[in-house]
Picture 1 (tube, rainbow, N blue to C red):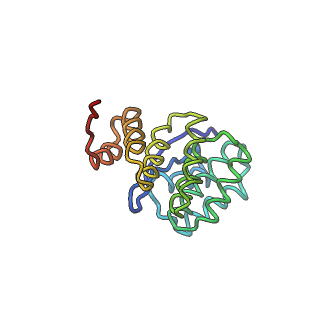
Picture 2: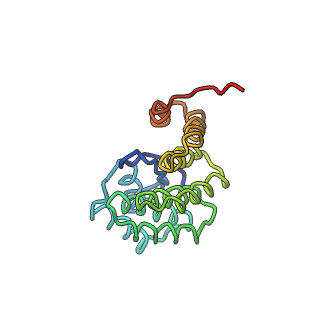
Picture 3: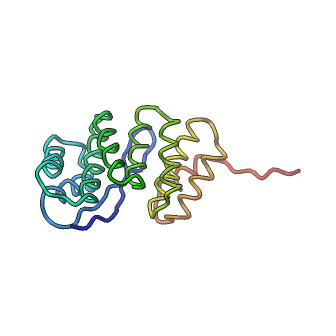
Amino acid sequence: MKATLLSSALLLIAPVAAAQMVVVGEGAAHSCYQSALTGNPGTMGAIKTCTRAIEQDFLAKRDEAATRVNRGVLLTRKGDYEKAEADYDVALKIFPDLPEAHINYGVTLYHQNRLTEAKASFDTALEIGSEKDALALFNRGLIHERQDNAPAAYRDYKAASELMPEWDQPIEAMSRFTVTRRTS
């Protein structure tokens, strides 16, 4: 099995972007990925499928990490943040430089209003760098906005939009701002 990356979005007060990890092939790990990808709200059946993949399938380390990230996404959607954090912790022990795990960990922390920790997770994902940088920038922008740091929020939304011009959420977020030029 080969693991690659994909993304989708979660919704709360403001939309927070999450990153799933593709598990190619058949079996419970792939079904777990499909549940995370298609917006499954964290049903018990989907979570049990992920658990079965982790416990019973003989997954390569990358696929185990991907399946834990995907189960964490489902657990976050369900509101079971403690278990989601545990999955991200294990995924990061397997692959400490896994940006999707850092992004989703940050999303889970954001949902718990642990903004400083969430920002640190998004910063780490950005330091690692990946094709998911737009997700981390957008989420960090949400934190800056909640902390009343409009210039930093706007910069992050703009950078996210430049990285993924087809993604509407950063453009919608920027529309909440009025940009004025300072004259000296």
